[in-house]
Length: 463
Image (cartoon, rainbow, N blue to C red; front, side, top):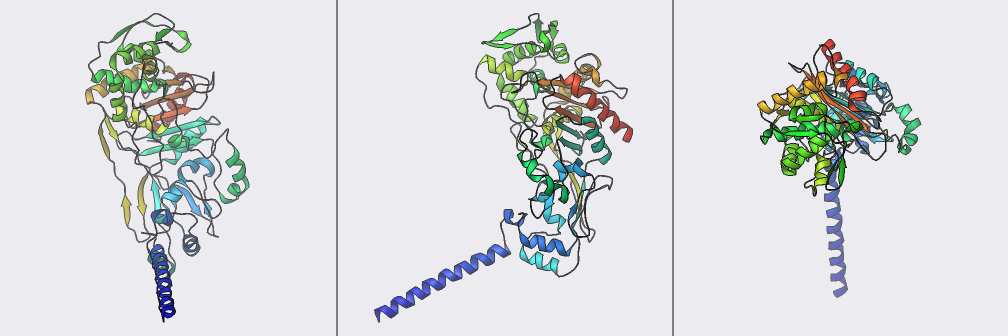
Protein backbone atom coordinates (compact mmCIF):
# COMPACT_ATOMS: atom_id res chain seq x y z
CA UNK A 1 0.00 0.00 0.00
CA UNK A 2 2.81 2.32 0.96
CA UNK A 3 4.62 1.50 -2.30
CA UNK A 4 1.46 2.26 -4.33
CA UNK A 5 1.19 5.69 -2.67
CA UNK A 6 4.81 6.48 -3.51
CA UNK A 7 4.30 5.43 -7.12
CA UNK A 8 1.25 7.72 -7.36
CA UNK A 9 3.19 10.65 -5.85
CA UNK A 10 6.05 10.07 -8.27
CA UNK A 11 3.64 9.98 -11.22
CA UNK A 12 1.99 13.23 -10.08
CA UNK A 13 5.41 14.89 -9.72
CA UNK A 14 6.49 13.72 -13.17
CA UNK A 15 3.19 14.91 -14.59
CA UNK A 16 3.60 18.36 -13.04
CA UNK A 17 7.14 18.62 -14.36
CA UNK A 18 6.00 17.63 -17.84
CA UNK A 19 3.12 20.13 -17.69
CA UNK A 20 5.46 22.95 -16.60
CA UNK A 21 7.75 22.19 -19.51
CA UNK A 22 4.79 22.27 -21.92
CA UNK A 23 3.57 25.59 -20.49
CA UNK A 24 7.08 27.12 -20.69
CA UNK A 25 7.62 26.03 -24.29
CA UNK A 26 4.16 27.24 -25.32
CA UNK A 27 4.71 30.67 -23.76
CA UNK A 28 8.21 30.85 -25.24
CA UNK A 29 6.83 30.22 -28.73
CA UNK A 30 3.82 32.52 -28.41
CA UNK A 31 5.57 35.30 -26.49
CA UNK A 32 9.29 35.04 -27.18
CA UNK A 33 11.74 37.48 -25.57
CA UNK A 34 12.76 40.47 -27.68
CA UNK A 35 16.26 39.13 -28.27
CA UNK A 36 14.74 35.89 -29.60
CA UNK A 37 12.29 37.76 -31.83
CA UNK A 38 15.15 39.69 -33.39
CA UNK A 39 17.59 36.80 -33.58
CA UNK A 40 18.88 36.17 -37.11
CA UNK A 41 18.98 32.48 -36.21
CA UNK A 42 15.22 32.23 -35.64
CA UNK A 43 14.35 29.72 -38.38
CA UNK A 44 10.69 30.78 -38.41
CA UNK A 45 11.74 34.16 -39.79
CA UNK A 46 13.86 32.55 -42.49
CA UNK A 47 10.95 30.30 -43.49
CA UNK A 48 8.70 33.33 -43.63
CA UNK A 49 11.24 35.14 -45.80
CA UNK A 50 10.93 32.37 -48.39
CA UNK A 51 7.20 33.06 -48.70
CA UNK A 52 7.11 36.84 -48.89
CA UNK A 53 9.24 39.63 -50.27
CA UNK A 54 11.41 41.42 -47.76
CA UNK A 55 10.89 45.18 -47.63
CA UNK A 56 13.37 47.50 -49.30
CA UNK A 57 15.58 50.24 -47.89
CA UNK A 58 15.40 53.56 -49.73
CA UNK A 59 17.21 56.87 -49.53
CA UNK A 60 15.30 60.12 -48.93
CA UNK A 61 14.61 60.47 -52.68
CA UNK A 62 13.47 56.88 -53.29
CA UNK A 63 16.81 55.48 -54.46
CA UNK A 64 16.87 51.73 -53.75
CA UNK A 65 19.64 50.81 -51.31
CA UNK A 66 18.62 47.23 -50.49
CA UNK A 67 16.35 44.89 -52.45
CA UNK A 68 15.81 41.17 -53.08
CA UNK A 69 16.98 38.75 -55.74
CA UNK A 70 14.54 36.30 -57.35
CA UNK A 71 15.74 33.55 -55.00
CA UNK A 72 14.94 35.74 -51.98
CA UNK A 73 18.52 36.61 -51.04
CA UNK A 74 19.29 40.20 -50.11
CA UNK A 75 20.82 42.46 -52.75
CA UNK A 76 22.74 45.68 -52.10
CA UNK A 77 23.02 47.54 -55.41
CA UNK A 78 25.37 50.19 -53.98
CA UNK A 79 27.95 47.63 -52.82
CA UNK A 80 29.86 48.76 -49.74
CA UNK A 81 28.55 52.33 -49.71
CA UNK A 82 25.94 51.57 -47.02
CA UNK A 83 27.51 48.55 -45.31
CA UNK A 84 27.93 50.40 -42.00
CA UNK A 85 24.36 51.69 -42.15
CA UNK A 86 22.27 48.82 -43.52
CA UNK A 87 24.56 45.98 -42.49
CA UNK A 88 23.74 42.65 -44.14
CA UNK A 89 21.18 39.83 -43.95
CA UNK A 90 22.51 36.31 -44.33
CA UNK A 91 21.40 32.86 -43.21
CA UNK A 92 25.04 32.02 -42.52
CA UNK A 93 26.29 35.21 -40.89
CA UNK A 94 23.07 36.61 -39.45
CA UNK A 95 21.85 40.20 -39.56
CA UNK A 96 23.43 43.41 -38.30
CA UNK A 97 22.70 47.15 -38.12
CA UNK A 98 19.46 48.33 -39.79
CA UNK A 99 18.82 44.90 -41.29
CA UNK A 100 18.65 43.58 -37.72
CA UNK A 101 17.04 46.56 -36.02
CA UNK A 102 14.25 46.83 -38.62
CA UNK A 103 13.85 43.11 -39.25
CA UNK A 104 10.26 42.97 -37.96
CA UNK A 105 9.25 45.82 -40.24
CA UNK A 106 11.06 44.32 -43.22
CA UNK A 107 9.15 41.06 -42.69
CA UNK A 108 5.93 42.88 -41.72
CA UNK A 109 5.98 41.28 -38.26
CA UNK A 110 4.40 43.65 -35.78
CA UNK A 111 5.28 41.67 -32.67
CA UNK A 112 7.29 38.76 -33.98
CA UNK A 113 5.19 36.11 -32.19
CA UNK A 114 3.78 32.88 -33.61
CA UNK A 115 0.34 34.36 -34.30
CA UNK A 116 1.90 36.90 -36.64
CA UNK A 117 3.99 34.23 -38.32
CA UNK A 118 0.95 32.07 -38.99
CA UNK A 119 -0.93 35.09 -40.34
CA UNK A 120 1.93 35.99 -42.64
CA UNK A 121 2.29 32.40 -43.88
CA UNK A 122 -1.34 32.31 -44.86
CA UNK A 123 -0.98 34.69 -47.80
CA UNK A 124 1.62 36.02 -50.20
CA UNK A 125 2.75 39.40 -48.87
CA UNK A 126 5.71 41.75 -48.76
CA UNK A 127 7.33 43.58 -45.91
CA UNK A 128 7.50 47.29 -45.19
CA UNK A 129 9.79 49.66 -47.08
CA UNK A 130 12.09 51.70 -44.84
CA UNK A 131 13.02 55.20 -46.02
CA UNK A 132 16.20 56.78 -44.69
CA UNK A 133 17.03 60.45 -44.22
CA UNK A 134 20.31 59.90 -46.11
CA UNK A 135 20.81 61.54 -49.50
CA UNK A 136 22.43 58.98 -51.81
CA UNK A 137 24.21 61.56 -53.97
CA UNK A 138 25.80 63.16 -50.91
CA UNK A 139 26.71 59.76 -49.43
CA UNK A 140 28.40 58.70 -52.66
CA UNK A 141 30.27 61.98 -52.92
CA UNK A 142 31.42 61.79 -49.29
CA UNK A 143 32.78 58.29 -49.93
CA UNK A 144 34.60 59.45 -53.05
CA UNK A 145 36.24 62.34 -51.17
CA UNK A 146 37.29 60.10 -48.30
CA UNK A 147 38.80 57.70 -50.83
CA UNK A 148 41.08 55.07 -49.34
CA UNK A 149 41.64 56.96 -46.10
CA UNK A 150 40.40 55.32 -42.92
CA UNK A 151 37.84 57.42 -41.15
CA UNK A 152 34.29 58.70 -41.30
CA UNK A 153 32.04 61.42 -42.63
CA UNK A 154 28.83 62.44 -40.86
CA UNK A 155 26.49 65.13 -42.19
CA UNK A 156 23.36 66.35 -40.39
CA UNK A 157 20.57 68.82 -40.97
CA UNK A 158 21.17 71.08 -37.95
CA UNK A 159 17.55 72.19 -37.71
CA UNK A 160 15.97 68.72 -37.75
CA UNK A 161 18.66 66.19 -36.79
CA UNK A 162 18.22 64.25 -40.04
CA UNK A 163 21.32 62.30 -41.04
CA UNK A 164 22.24 63.34 -44.57
CA UNK A 165 25.36 61.18 -44.89
CA UNK A 166 26.87 58.50 -42.65
CA UNK A 167 29.91 56.83 -44.15
CA UNK A 168 32.72 54.79 -42.59
CA UNK A 169 35.84 53.45 -44.26
CA UNK A 170 37.21 50.77 -44.65
CA UNK A 171 34.04 49.10 -45.86
CA UNK A 172 33.23 45.86 -47.68
CA UNK A 173 30.70 44.38 -50.09
CA UNK A 174 27.75 42.97 -48.08
CA UNK A 175 26.22 41.03 -50.99
CA UNK A 176 25.88 37.33 -50.23
CA UNK A 177 28.49 35.95 -52.62
CA UNK A 178 31.13 38.52 -51.67
CA UNK A 179 30.34 38.13 -47.98
CA UNK A 180 30.74 34.34 -48.14
CA UNK A 181 34.01 34.67 -50.04
CA UNK A 182 35.57 37.32 -47.80
CA UNK A 183 34.04 36.91 -44.35
CA UNK A 184 36.91 35.04 -42.72
CA UNK A 185 39.50 37.45 -44.10
CA UNK A 186 37.45 40.44 -42.97
CA UNK A 187 36.95 39.01 -39.50
CA UNK A 188 40.68 38.41 -39.05
CA UNK A 189 41.75 41.83 -40.31
CA UNK A 190 42.50 43.48 -36.95
CA UNK A 191 44.63 46.20 -38.51
CA UNK A 192 41.88 47.62 -40.73
CA UNK A 193 38.86 46.51 -38.64
CA UNK A 194 36.41 46.66 -41.57
CA UNK A 195 33.44 45.57 -39.43
CA UNK A 196 33.72 48.71 -37.26
CA UNK A 197 31.24 51.45 -38.18
CA UNK A 198 33.64 54.27 -37.40
CA UNK A 199 31.05 57.02 -37.74
CA UNK A 200 29.04 55.70 -34.78
CA UNK A 201 31.30 53.21 -32.99
CA UNK A 202 34.77 54.67 -33.44
CA UNK A 203 36.03 56.40 -30.26
CA UNK A 204 38.75 59.03 -30.69
CA UNK A 205 40.31 61.89 -28.77
CA UNK A 206 38.51 64.92 -30.27
CA UNK A 207 41.57 67.16 -30.16
CA UNK A 208 40.97 70.85 -30.70
CA UNK A 209 37.39 70.34 -31.91
CA UNK A 210 36.66 69.98 -28.17
CA UNK A 211 37.69 73.62 -27.75
CA UNK A 212 34.20 74.53 -28.99
CA UNK A 213 32.87 73.03 -25.75
CA UNK A 214 35.56 74.57 -23.54
CA UNK A 215 35.00 77.99 -25.13
CA UNK A 216 31.24 77.60 -24.62
CA UNK A 217 31.82 76.83 -20.93
CA UNK A 218 34.06 79.91 -20.59
CA UNK A 219 31.50 82.17 -22.25
CA UNK A 220 28.73 80.81 -20.04
CA UNK A 221 30.92 81.47 -16.99
CA UNK A 222 31.47 85.09 -18.05
CA UNK A 223 35.14 84.63 -18.94
CA UNK A 224 34.92 86.45 -22.27
CA UNK A 225 37.62 88.86 -20.97
CA UNK A 226 40.19 86.04 -20.76
CA UNK A 227 43.67 86.93 -22.02
CA UNK A 228 46.89 84.95 -22.34
CA UNK A 229 50.49 85.73 -23.32
CA UNK A 230 51.41 82.95 -25.72
CA UNK A 231 55.14 83.55 -25.82
CA UNK A 232 56.70 80.23 -24.80
CA UNK A 233 57.01 77.15 -26.98
CA UNK A 234 56.20 74.93 -24.03
CA UNK A 235 54.26 75.53 -20.81
CA UNK A 236 54.31 73.16 -17.84
CA UNK A 237 51.17 72.31 -15.90
CA UNK A 238 52.16 70.34 -12.83
CA UNK A 239 54.91 68.64 -14.85
CA UNK A 240 52.80 68.05 -17.96
CA UNK A 241 54.24 69.87 -20.96
CA UNK A 242 51.74 71.59 -23.25
CA UNK A 243 52.80 73.10 -26.56
CA UNK A 244 51.11 74.45 -29.65
CA UNK A 245 51.20 72.45 -32.86
CA UNK A 246 54.61 72.85 -34.42
CA UNK A 247 55.86 74.74 -31.37
CA UNK A 248 54.34 78.01 -32.59
CA UNK A 249 53.70 81.01 -30.37
CA UNK A 250 51.02 83.64 -31.01
CA UNK A 251 51.75 86.49 -28.62
CA UNK A 252 48.98 88.29 -26.77
CA UNK A 253 45.66 86.49 -27.15
CA UNK A 254 42.10 87.08 -26.09
CA UNK A 255 39.58 84.24 -25.99
CA UNK A 256 38.50 84.65 -29.61
CA UNK A 257 42.03 84.75 -31.04
CA UNK A 258 43.05 81.78 -28.86
CA UNK A 259 40.13 79.86 -30.38
CA UNK A 260 40.78 80.97 -33.96
CA UNK A 261 44.50 80.16 -33.78
CA UNK A 262 43.77 77.05 -31.68
CA UNK A 263 46.39 77.83 -29.05
CA UNK A 264 46.88 74.79 -26.83
CA UNK A 265 48.79 76.69 -24.17
CA UNK A 266 46.05 79.32 -23.95
CA UNK A 267 43.28 76.75 -23.65
CA UNK A 268 45.21 74.75 -21.06
CA UNK A 269 45.47 77.94 -19.00
CA UNK A 270 41.79 78.69 -19.64
CA UNK A 271 40.81 75.24 -18.40
CA UNK A 272 42.89 75.73 -15.26
CA UNK A 273 41.06 78.99 -14.48
CA UNK A 274 37.66 77.63 -15.47
CA UNK A 275 37.83 74.37 -13.54
CA UNK A 276 36.88 70.93 -14.80
CA UNK A 277 33.38 70.89 -13.33
CA UNK A 278 32.21 73.61 -15.72
CA UNK A 279 33.84 71.85 -18.68
CA UNK A 280 32.19 68.55 -17.75
CA UNK A 281 28.77 70.18 -17.34
CA UNK A 282 29.06 71.74 -20.79
CA UNK A 283 30.30 68.51 -22.39
CA UNK A 284 27.28 66.68 -20.99
CA UNK A 285 24.96 69.43 -22.23
CA UNK A 286 26.30 68.62 -25.71
CA UNK A 287 25.69 64.88 -25.25
CA UNK A 288 28.84 63.40 -23.72
CA UNK A 289 28.28 60.60 -21.19
CA UNK A 290 24.82 60.08 -22.64
CA UNK A 291 23.56 57.00 -24.47
CA UNK A 292 22.35 58.44 -27.75
CA UNK A 293 18.90 57.32 -28.87
CA UNK A 294 19.43 56.43 -32.49
CA UNK A 295 18.34 53.87 -35.08
CA UNK A 296 21.70 52.15 -34.63
CA UNK A 297 23.70 51.44 -31.50
CA UNK A 298 26.10 54.34 -30.93
CA UNK A 299 29.15 54.07 -28.70
CA UNK A 300 28.92 56.58 -25.86
CA UNK A 301 31.18 59.62 -26.14
CA UNK A 302 32.94 59.95 -22.80
CA UNK A 303 34.24 62.78 -20.70
CA UNK A 304 35.82 61.64 -17.42
CA UNK A 305 33.66 62.23 -14.34
CA UNK A 306 36.59 63.84 -12.59
CA UNK A 307 40.04 65.06 -13.56
CA UNK A 308 42.76 65.12 -10.94
CA UNK A 309 45.75 67.40 -11.21
CA UNK A 310 46.64 70.42 -13.32
CA UNK A 311 48.35 68.25 -15.93
CA UNK A 312 45.28 66.11 -16.63
CA UNK A 313 43.08 69.21 -16.70
CA UNK A 314 45.40 70.87 -19.20
CA UNK A 315 45.25 67.83 -21.49
CA UNK A 316 41.47 67.62 -21.24
CA UNK A 317 41.11 71.33 -22.02
CA UNK A 318 42.76 70.78 -25.41
CA UNK A 319 40.72 67.68 -26.26
CA UNK A 320 43.21 65.02 -25.17
CA UNK A 321 43.54 63.03 -21.94
CA UNK A 322 40.73 60.59 -21.30
CA UNK A 323 38.20 62.21 -23.65
CA UNK A 324 36.66 59.97 -26.32
CA UNK A 325 34.15 60.99 -28.98
CA UNK A 326 32.48 59.49 -32.02
CA UNK A 327 32.26 61.40 -35.30
CA UNK A 328 28.45 61.43 -34.90
CA UNK A 329 28.86 63.16 -31.52
CA UNK A 330 31.16 65.83 -32.91
CA UNK A 331 28.86 66.41 -35.90
CA UNK A 332 26.13 67.00 -33.30
CA UNK A 333 28.34 69.61 -31.60
CA UNK A 334 28.71 71.50 -34.89
CA UNK A 335 24.99 71.17 -35.64
CA UNK A 336 24.07 72.52 -32.21
CA UNK A 337 26.13 75.68 -32.69
CA UNK A 338 24.69 76.09 -36.19
CA UNK A 339 21.19 75.76 -34.74
CA UNK A 340 21.69 78.66 -32.29
CA UNK A 341 22.42 76.34 -29.37
CA UNK A 342 19.49 73.93 -29.71
CA UNK A 343 20.61 70.29 -29.85
CA UNK A 344 18.48 68.10 -32.10
CA UNK A 345 18.47 64.33 -31.71
CA UNK A 346 20.01 62.73 -34.84
CA UNK A 347 17.82 60.23 -36.65
CA UNK A 348 18.31 57.98 -39.65
CA UNK A 349 14.91 56.48 -40.51
CA UNK A 350 12.22 58.91 -41.61
CA UNK A 351 9.41 56.60 -42.71
CA UNK A 352 8.28 52.96 -42.62
CA UNK A 353 5.66 52.18 -45.27
CA UNK A 354 3.62 48.97 -44.91
CA UNK A 355 2.03 47.10 -47.84
CA UNK A 356 -1.43 48.43 -46.96
CA UNK A 357 -0.16 52.00 -47.30
CA UNK A 358 0.11 52.65 -43.56
CA UNK A 359 3.04 54.95 -42.67
CA UNK A 360 5.04 55.24 -39.48
CA UNK A 361 6.93 58.52 -39.70
CA UNK A 362 9.74 59.85 -37.50
CA UNK A 363 9.81 63.53 -36.60
CA UNK A 364 12.42 65.87 -35.20
CA UNK A 365 13.09 65.86 -31.48
CA UNK A 366 14.85 68.59 -29.53
CA UNK A 367 17.23 67.70 -26.70
CA UNK A 368 17.01 71.24 -25.36
CA UNK A 369 19.55 74.05 -25.49
CA UNK A 370 23.18 73.11 -24.85
CA UNK A 371 24.06 76.83 -24.78
CA UNK A 372 22.13 80.05 -24.96
CA UNK A 373 21.47 81.66 -28.30
CA UNK A 374 23.90 84.50 -27.50
CA UNK A 375 26.74 82.07 -26.66
CA UNK A 376 25.99 80.09 -29.84
CA UNK A 377 26.09 83.23 -31.96
CA UNK A 378 29.44 84.24 -30.48
CA UNK A 379 30.83 80.81 -31.30
CA UNK A 380 29.35 81.10 -34.80
CA UNK A 381 31.38 84.26 -35.35
CA UNK A 382 34.51 82.58 -34.04
CA UNK A 383 34.01 79.49 -36.20
CA UNK A 384 33.62 81.72 -39.25
CA UNK A 385 36.93 83.37 -38.34
CA UNK A 386 38.61 79.95 -38.02
CA UNK A 387 37.88 79.41 -41.72
CA UNK A 388 38.53 82.93 -42.98
CA UNK A 389 41.74 83.63 -41.04
CA UNK A 390 42.59 80.78 -38.65
CA UNK A 391 43.55 77.11 -38.79
CA UNK A 392 40.72 76.17 -41.18
CA UNK A 393 41.48 78.36 -44.21
CA UNK A 394 41.58 75.25 -46.41
CA UNK A 395 37.81 75.07 -45.92
CA UNK A 396 37.14 78.50 -47.42
CA UNK A 397 34.46 78.57 -50.12
CA UNK A 398 32.14 81.09 -51.72
CA UNK A 399 29.11 79.63 -49.93
CA UNK A 400 30.59 80.64 -46.57
CA UNK A 401 31.73 77.92 -44.16
CA UNK A 402 32.24 78.00 -40.39
CA UNK A 403 34.20 75.34 -38.55
CA UNK A 404 36.83 74.13 -36.14
CA UNK A 405 39.88 72.02 -36.86
CA UNK A 406 41.34 69.34 -34.63
CA UNK A 407 44.59 67.39 -34.55
CA UNK A 408 44.54 64.60 -31.97
CA UNK A 409 47.46 62.62 -30.66
CA UNK A 410 46.99 58.88 -30.19
CA UNK A 411 48.98 55.73 -29.51
CA UNK A 412 50.90 56.08 -32.78
CA UNK A 413 53.69 58.65 -32.86
CA UNK A 414 53.61 61.03 -35.85
CA UNK A 415 50.20 59.72 -36.96
CA UNK A 416 47.72 62.18 -35.48
CA UNK A 417 44.01 61.91 -36.18
CA UNK A 418 42.71 64.80 -38.29
CA UNK A 419 39.33 66.39 -37.53
CA UNK A 420 37.12 69.08 -38.98
CA UNK A 421 33.66 70.01 -37.75
CA UNK A 422 31.60 72.79 -39.26
CA UNK A 423 28.54 73.87 -41.20
CA UNK A 424 27.35 75.84 -44.24
CA UNK A 425 26.21 78.31 -45.35
CA UNK A 426 27.73 80.28 -42.50
CA UNK A 427 24.78 82.67 -42.34
CA UNK A 428 21.85 80.28 -42.91
CA UNK A 429 23.12 76.75 -42.15
CA UNK A 430 21.38 73.79 -43.78
CA UNK A 431 24.08 71.18 -43.18
CA UNK A 432 26.60 70.41 -40.42
CA UNK A 433 29.51 68.05 -40.85
CA UNK A 434 32.24 66.07 -39.16
CA UNK A 435 35.19 64.60 -41.05
CA UNK A 436 37.53 62.30 -39.14
CA UNK A 437 40.68 60.84 -40.71
CA UNK A 438 42.35 58.09 -38.70
CA UNK A 439 46.12 58.28 -38.30
CA UNK A 440 46.35 60.93 -41.01
CA UNK A 441 49.69 62.22 -39.76
CA UNK A 442 48.62 65.74 -40.75
CA UNK A 443 46.62 68.52 -39.14
CA UNK A 444 42.86 68.75 -39.33
CA UNK A 445 43.22 72.01 -41.22
CA UNK A 446 45.47 70.42 -43.80
CA UNK A 447 43.83 66.99 -44.24
CA UNK A 448 40.19 67.08 -43.10
CA UNK A 449 39.12 70.67 -43.85
CA UNK A 450 39.35 70.38 -47.69
CA UNK A 451 37.23 67.22 -47.65
CA UNK A 452 34.62 68.89 -45.45
CA UNK A 453 34.62 71.97 -47.69
CA UNK A 454 33.93 69.96 -50.83
CA UNK A 455 31.10 67.99 -49.21
CA UNK A 456 29.47 71.14 -47.81
CA UNK A 457 29.70 72.84 -51.21
CA UNK A 458 28.31 69.74 -52.90
CA UNK A 459 25.21 69.87 -50.70
CA UNK A 460 24.52 73.45 -51.73
CA UNK A 461 24.74 72.43 -55.40
CA UNK A 462 22.40 69.49 -54.84
CA UNK A 463 19.89 71.79 -53.18
